[in-house]
Length: 205
Ligand SMILES: [Zn+2]
Image 1: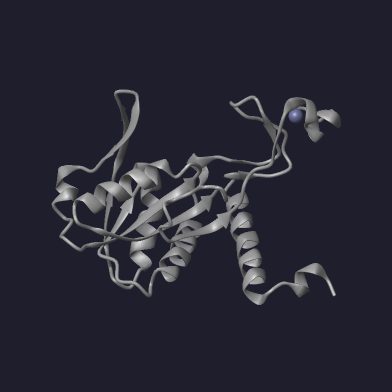
Image 2: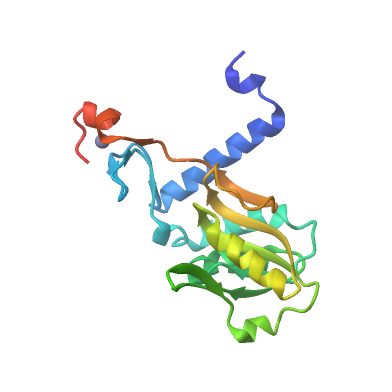
């Protein structure tokens, strides 16, 4: 019996689903595997995702958005909140596929006094009724700090965060125990330059 066949059906389903989603991201040109990449941190990796290419294929984006919407379909949602304009196309696709027919709004990220801040245009703030149920959508979650800040902000306006839907999250990311659904949950392998297997094999970066 193979290792895959011994796994629990739910775990296997997640694994298969992730593989399909990775393949979709690969086809958009957003996800690179088996490459030799130098990261700005000075470390090396074999995998990389180009954020800007994630939603370039409308039918793929609609399909992925629908998977996120289906996961949250059992909960009523009044509003889908995109972390910023970057995740807005995906947010639209999630909202379009959710049975509650939620509205879509987006936040803005910025710095103030050297600290990360998020804000919500006042027109969007007015749409948040007390007790409004909000689903946050992000494309790639690496630290989760934007999502945490945005969740805290809308909760101050009296809204409830139903959950967070995203395409990709690093497994280590902590989102204050808020329910998160990601199509892919995966860390990139990173290596110190002197331990990098690609450098050792002489693969050009
Ligand atoms: Zn290397």
